[in-house]
Image 1 (cartoon, helix red, strand yellow):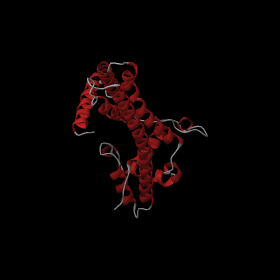
Image 2: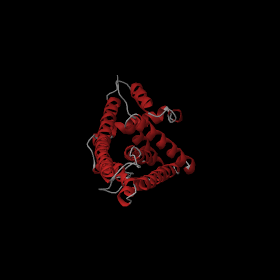
Image 3: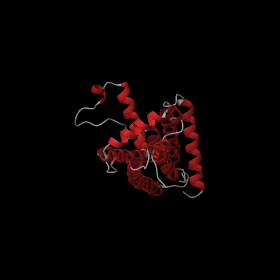
Image 4: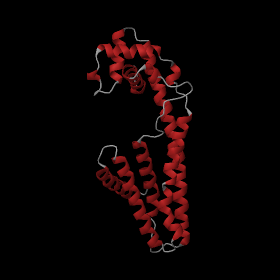
Length: 246
């Protein structure tokens, strides 16, 4: 059984498109430069912020604000900050492991195409790896151009080794998970009244959920709808986590 991955083939299709649409002199990057790409895509950013907020809110909403004293609040703050700090590290490591695994699979796919016994088998592997919505638009000649491109592509292009960009992405994930904790816990640091601090913290958390969804929703052209949906999903997941003892 041959494992396939679409990332390497998507790269091939993009390069082919650039080659046919943009003059070669403009399409070729300058020596010593790499194509610029986002450290994290919008889905990753929204997911990490949502995850971080859920983690910290499971601590804050479980606090009995009426009976809680300063020692209780201090213990909650230490727990929330420590939890998100640890999970920020875990998420960052998992992010790097995912990238490495994806690239290893991509390299295996390219090698399977190169070592295919016939051109038809190579085309089948390529077609199986491409998104279903793209495949109908490609002819046999397109599949052959992809195959020829991958035959000429160096393994270094998709080598599983992690790059500086990958490590920066992992750092961004850690920062999103950990630092989204701070606005939610700041009211407990500034206000002596635990009940007032809890209400202020909840308002901040809901506002952050909405802004995260609103920003993410701009990608689809429906920011308000996605913003309110993010609030609803976030509150539902928090309720589930609290009920289950999370």
